[in-house]
Amino acid sequence: MRFILASNNIKKLAELKAILSGFDAEVLSQTEAGLCFEAEETGGTFEENAIIKAKAACGALNEPAIADDSGLVVDALDGEPGVFSARYGGDACRSDGERTALLLRNMRGKENRSAKFVSCIACVFPNGDIITARGECGGSITPSPRGKGGFGYDPVFEPSGMDRTMAELTAEEKNAVSHRGAALRNFETKLREYYADK
Ligand code: IMP
Image 1 (spheres, rainbow, N blue to C red):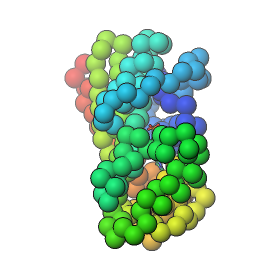
Image 2 (cartoon, helix red, strand yellow):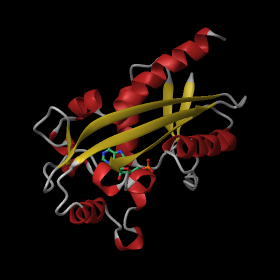
Image 3 (cartoon, rainbow, N blue to C red):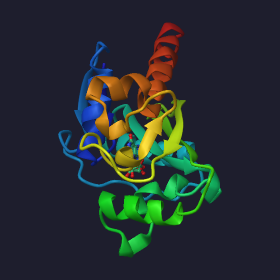
């Protein structure tokens, strides 16, 4: 088995590869496979965007491709930044630090700090078959950033039942509780069922 990971986010690729290392499969990033574009995320849901990205890589390389679309859903902000997590604040926010600062500004004065990370994985096969899997990690938005690990909104997100932010966890600890870890474990089950039915 060989899978292409349709992402250019180096930190996300490292997490996907680490979690997929338990699989009996060769896993290549799309850049390693010679593909240097990422499809535009025009979908309205995490699942639609994951399928768009995986379809684009599968279509270009004619190999099974896996994509993840993920983001942070904050209750007090009516679900924002949601599918726009990577583009939150538009051109005014070009770095993870700027997007995180914007989130904390928008959360000023909000009593309800509850939020969740969501990840949807899609795997698209050259014959048109599609497998999707979802994972979530509930928690809360901290008053200020803490920790240097991970990426994105990790420094301001404390998973439920923990007194550390995602950015204060080791990579293994994060994979054990994260939305992406949960989605990939669901995905592994579905992939095994898919091949068992063949
Ligand atoms: P996309 O899935 O490439 O569209 O990016 C989703 C965006 O959501 C990332 O750029 C991050 O800002 C955020 N995000 C997704 N997963 C995580 C995570 O595990 N930690 C922190 N931020 C995340």
